[in-house]
Image 1 (cartoon, rainbow, N blue to C red):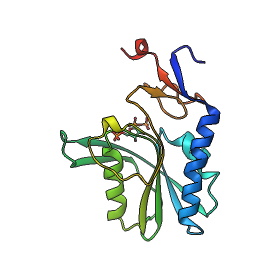
Image 2 (image 1 turned 180 degrees about the vertical axis):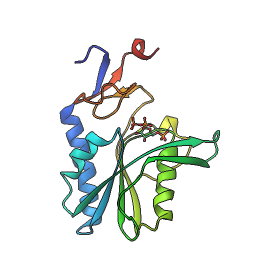
Image 3 (image 1 turned 180 degrees about the horizontal axis):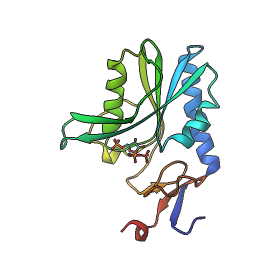
Length: 178
Ligand code: PRP
């Protein structure tokens, strides 16, 4: 285990099971309909790589990077798109792939944006969710698992751009970020 990790929350086998369950639901729902998997950089790259390999339909892959600026506890906010899709999403089934939902701002704004662009449908697959941190309600059609409000890293998730490469999801030792 990495010296900065206090505790492993999900090991590789547990992650594999969670990802498998998410993939199964997606396969059941979409059947043969082609989707555009929208990988939200950077955190979801590892989850996305594992998830799309378990999907049975035709899958196009594209990338977005965004940051949201909310206004207090209101559901309104502004999204800054740092990297945009290359795909014209109009008339296509968009599946947003995210590593974690925290306040919900990024995902609710992204979902709205893709609907505005005329996607045939927009759904979200998120590996993790911290319900205790939610400010904006966002419907998450495919959720891996809820987690407590702890500082988690690994399997794509970072702290100061580190730890994304850990194969497990762990809780960071407080002395690392305090
Ligand atoms: C994280 C995560 C989501 C967002 C969730 O990304 O991947 O995109 O924050 O937070 P929210 O629900 O409060 O909007 P981050 O901005 O840390 O970028 P990264 O994926 O590049 O690490």
